[in-house]
Structure formats: C-alpha cells, structure tokens
Image 1: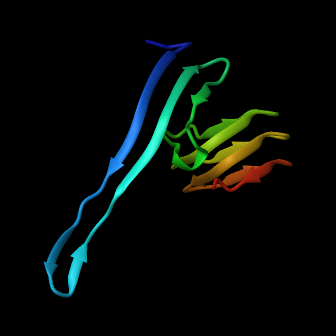
Image 2 (image 1 turned 135 degrees about the horizontal axis):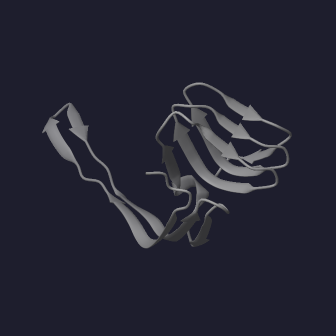
Length: 117
C-alpha cells in the first residue's frame, strides 16, 4: 500500500510537571512546572504544515523517523528543533527559528537561522 497524501489536524495544550526527592543529606533531585502553551498543527504532505496559537519555537520538537532525511523547501520558514538520524537539507532562502540536529549532516544554502529564546 502506498500513501500519496496524509492529513492530520491536532490541537492541544502542553505541560511538563517535575517533582523532587531527597535521597540523603548530600543527594537530591528536584524539578518544577513548565507550561508549553497552547498550540495547533495541521500537516498535509503537499503543502507543508502550519503552526498556530501561542506555541514557541523553543518548545517545539520534531522527531523524524526513517532514513529519508528532512528537506526544508526554498523560501520556507521553519520553527522548532528537528531531531533526525538522517541528513537535514535547508534549501536556498529558507529561514529557521530553532535548531537542526542530525546524526549525519545539516546542509544550509544561504539561510537565516535564529536561535529560539
């Protein structure tokens, strides 16, 4: 079976909750609450997806499975951090607010990359 298109529409609110525990007087682990905010994502294979709501680039992580890699098209704008085993190719003129982390290579072609706050 071959899929030529896919549509996915998700809306959600994200939270992280941390706790703490003191093992002895010299060793303790602790954490806190982190609000990821409300976000929405709509994906269609052609054209690319769109983020909406109050999502922040520093809290968006795209984990890509498979060996095909990731290609960000010319003049596209990407937000978030991409994590993949294969290569990431960012085509000419594309801009990025986030990070590109690949185990093989990240190729940039005259791009603007901004570190998320």
